[in-house]
Length: 168
Image (cartoon, rainbow, N blue to C red):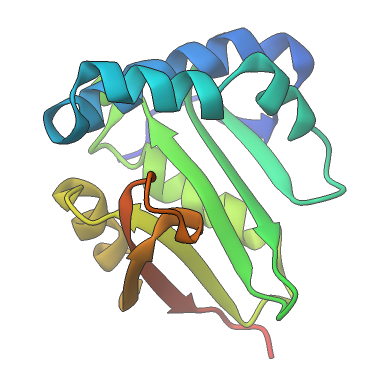
């Protein structure tokens, strides 16, 4: 059951410090046991810097959303359209205390609805992130293949998952 009063909207510049804090918290909660605290901090500092987050604002290259209860940002997502018209989910993170009550499901649905012409949605998920894999399977995603994120050896081992959407 999604919390009452959940608001999902485009991220704004004023949100970025809170989004960064959310990403750092969720990355440590999710990946410290897989990569260790130091490596998670390195990845998080590189990928979730305020500069990188600022560059993702606006709808030119996709969507960058936040979910709030009251004035507290509790989740974030982002996605972009690929050359083959697929919607590529690039981020979906919910603060741990808010997981398991429908926030992620609702945010995923809103994110994918931003791409009404996409025939398929895709995502990459860390192969050892069993909770996320189970979540995406419940949301209708299936395994396509295993790969290294961005094809580089120094990045997480990922599973590529996909889900058919209704557009044709």
